[in-house]
Image (cartoon, rainbow, N blue to C red):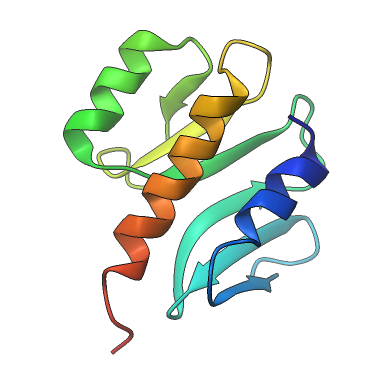
Length: 109
């Protein structure tokens, strides 16, 4: 999955907005005013942070070499997914879906 594929897929989620609150190098995708993906635009290989259920986060980290605790995030609730070929594209889409669902379930205050 390329950077463009990742962003295009995430933008298919309803009420998703693109923001650059940390400057031009990190795209933050939000819904209901809450972040569900953080995507560094210049990383090689492509990687992103996604919110995750804490128990599932631990299981995923054990299962895939390219899934690690969230870089610069709460490591209990966020994973960094590295698109180095070790994480199948289907799982990448599932992780984006899961992150979106966790965040969209919470209403903006």
